[in-house]
Image (cartoon, rainbow, N blue to C red; front, side, top):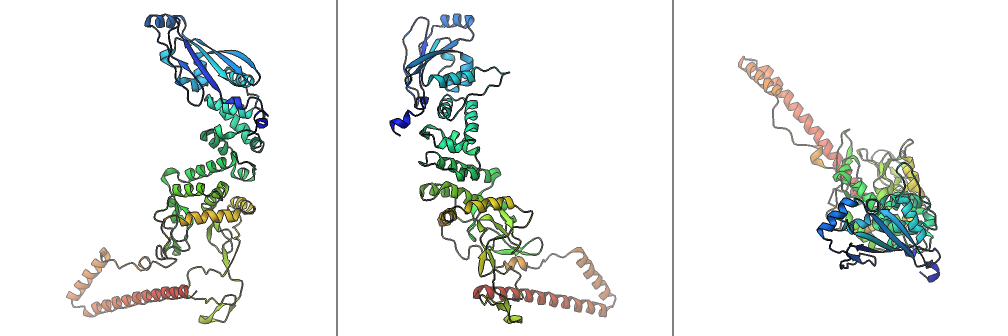
Length: 484
């Protein structure tokens, strides 16, 4: 920052307050000196006799504090008087230095900053509870007020500044001020008051604060997604992000398929071994070619889903452009049926949705989450944004051991779930039936017992036929996948 830039807004650099606290005992004892963190401060802490302390305690329960403000830029000074209790309640910075050991000392505080800014802080601190007063915050003094109130730990005033900045973020970024002195907590508050779409449209020529705001937005998103013990994971099969507790409600096109509650075949996500979201965020921060804005939309788009009206699949926003279809028509009939565009065979036993040879944009169902789809479409339409999101996806996939084709089944059917082993436990009705047949046999009804045995054999044969038919269907599916 040049000298001209530094003095373009008087008092901004002075907002990094230099404070000197002088605690004077009535008898003027000697003093210790200690250095305040981040400021040039000498704190004198004399020892006060017990008798003198008792006398002062009974005569003045709440002492006043004199604050001397020196404005080195304007070559001026001014004194302010404030009650000690009010000072400690509103400016919590002084709580670490004004405590019970020196509560009866005469206190003088010297502050080096802009007089007008400190006067505004005092007016805000001394306002009556029944009179809600708002500070005169403008673009010219917002940086000084924010840094000063943050340093003095005036939380309410910091909140006022954050609200003001959130309505004028672009103008705030163009101020010729170094924002390096702002704490992470304040940056997180500013980011929390801005929408992701708003942060995406901002322009910070020197990137003084925009990347920090976007990073805080990403960290807040990950924290929100992992609330309640949930965990953000990467699927070892489809390599998409998913929330572990929600994996049974979201299908995986490449996961091992099992029978769903409605009889359909559904694939489940499987977390990738060795993948951690904390490591992923660190690797994103180390790659300077990827913006935190793209990282936000990559994570957000991976965890938002919609139902496509064309392919009838539930997809994440990250798969918005992956609606598969066949542009050609079906030629020939029977077992020789195939698509004219890619000659892919059509199997009559294919219970799984047929994937196409081309892709287009999904069409969400009417009444669905069209607002989220529209927001994501507008964001990825920006120049190079889609490429940045794909770069984030590559970093996520490269973490941990390589994905194995056999890790989750790659869309294969879990035969064990389709054909569970027969139950050996006999029900009460079967036992009763068998005992009845024994009684009939004992009574000499041999023909009836033979008829029951024949029915049982026929039932077992029918079960075997259905079982073999199902296995044959699965073998046909495997052959189709192997040849496609």
